[in-house]
Length: 326
Ligand code: UT7
Image (tube, rainbow, N blue to C red; front, top):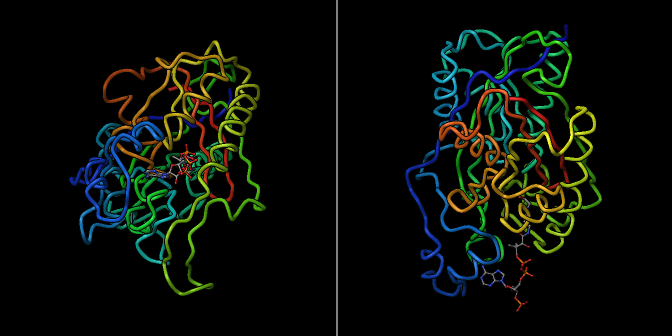
């Protein structure tokens, strides 16, 4: 018998405002087109938070949906981890705001900042807490308001990102220690800080005292993405003791349809085994994987017992993969 971190509930939230590519087409001086955005990224629309709507507010709605799905109360959660690079405030953490928002009077909460790889990092942390016996139930959330750190004059970035939140509850359950166990079977994390200039925000507390805006060398990030995502997913599968042929669903970070198709092709998997939401959500950074997973569960594609591969890469660079049996 070994302890596994098993998913028991998932939910998501997307802000009401849907922004189609045509809105960017209409922005004077931006010089972009629906055709370019679709062809180069696969994005057709994204959601933007309303004025005054914050990351923690979105995270709380997603968390409530996950609690409903699991059929448990917030008081039964021991730990809240929020993956975000766009917190409401510099501190306290979004996770403690979620803790309070859910009415929890116990447990502990903290944020993880690994940009687009944040949810994968948060899953690995939650798994470690559960496997080591420090928490029985962990609420793992990815929540972002990237619309707040866009340079609206930079067509190479502002058309790509969106806002939203997804929440997954993991629970300690006994497994047989085989690859048939439900729950997290393996995690694989990496970062390389020498690539900081490829994707960063040009402001922050100690450097400028401002929030800053996102800067990205898209082509370079793209080049790293396909290679590193393929490698980390393969390593994670190997650690889990399963093969690509065993995979039911790839739930990738949703940055660009061309990165997704390129990576999946390298695995040798068909696209009908991939949950794709980039067309509707854009790149929601740490929220993209739990959003996609929640959509896949809600529409019945992801079923109990299915083997999932999640993988993500983003600023840092930071990247990684998690193998999870639903
Ligand atoms: O989630 C975090 C990780 N981030 C990513 O994974 C993003 C990775 N990168 C990408 O997804 C892609 O590189 C982009 C979607 C950002 C860009 O696609 P690309 O095929 O690499 O295009 P490019 O940067 O090579 O640009 C091609 C052309 C350029 O014009 P010239 O120099 O060829 O004349 C750009 O100026 O497209 C131009 N361009 C645009 N044109 C219309 C760039 N952005 C736009 C735009 N509308 N929005």
